Length: 434
Ligand code: MN
Ligand code: MG
Image (cartoon, rainbow, N blue to C red; front, side):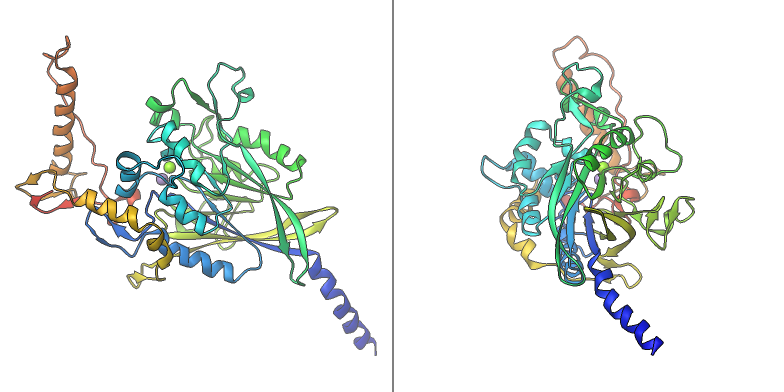
C-alpha cells in the first residue's frame, strides 16, 4: 500500500515538474563567407564539403527534433567568394533589392545575426545597402561612432548593440510560456587596422569583454531570461590583453551569459583541438560551464546548443546546457553527410549564374600552370603573379609624381595555402586561358 501511494504521488508530481521546465535549442552558423552553395567558383565545379545549402538540411533536421529553436549567424557572411565579390562590385543590390545571402537566410528564418570583421571589407556604404535586406535583426555592441565623445563607451552605437527577443516556448507538457532572449554581438577591435581605409575617422571599436561586462547586466535588468553572446571572436589560450582579438575564454566568465556562439578563427568547438584547455569540458561542449559552439567555416558545420530552463519566480533560469557540432561532410568516409536543400539554389539562381558568367570570362592567358602547393617553402608562380600585379599597379599610381623614378620592391605572402581555408584551399590553374 505504501509503495502504491509513493508511486502515485510521483505520477501526480511528474507533469508538474515538467511544466516548470523549458528546453531551448540554439543553432549557429558562422564564417559562411558567401558560400551559399556547394560550388567552387575557382575550379568551376561542385563541392560537397562546404555550402549553406547543405547546412540548411541540418537546420531543418535539428528543428524537427526540438520544440523550441532559435537560429543565429555569426558574420563574415557577405565577403569571401566570387559570388560575394560579384554582388559587391559587379551587381550590388539596388534600393529594394535583397542581397542573395538574405534571400536564403530570410527563407531559413534566422532569428538574429552578428557583424563579422569581413562585413567591413566593401566599405560602410555597401554594408548599409545590404543589411536592410535581412528580415531579422543585426547586433553589434562594440563599434561606436567616432565623434570625439569621451569616454568612447559613451559614444553612440553604430549598430543595434543587443536585442531582447520575445519568444513563446512550448514546455514538455505542451503549455506555452513567454521567454525573453537577450542577444548581443561583438567583432574584433582589430577591424580598425584591417579595414582602416573604410573605418578610420568614422567609427571606433571597444574592448569585447569589457563591453559584455557593461551591457549583460543591462540586458538582465531589461528582463532577459536568457543571454546569448554571438562573438565573432576566437578562443585562444592566455590572450587576455585589452583589445584582444580572441576573447571567448573571458566572455564565458561574464556573469549572466548562458551560451556563447563564436567563430572568426574558422575552428571547430566542441572539438579535440581544444581538449586540453582547463576551462573546457569537451563531452558537454562547455567553456567555464557555459555551452559554446564554433561551427567551422563556409557552412561546414551547424552548431547546436541545448539549454534546459527552470521556472524562477516570474522568469526562467538556465540550469543545464550542452553543445555539439553537426558536420555536412563525413571526413572519414570522404563523402557528404547530408544532401543540399534545393530551395537555396532556386532562391539565388540568377546571382549564381551571373557569377558563373563573370568568372568564366577570359581575362588573360598563361603559358604555364599556376599552383600554390609549395608556396610556403619555395619560390612560386602563384605568389609571383601577385607581386608583378602590385608593381604594375604602383608604377601606374606613381606615374607623373616626384616618386616615379624611385626603384620599387614588391612583397607578396602565400595566403592561399591550406591552413584555415582547409585542405583544399590552394590555387591550381592549368596553362591556357584564365
Ligand atoms: Mn571568417
Ligand atoms: Mg573573421
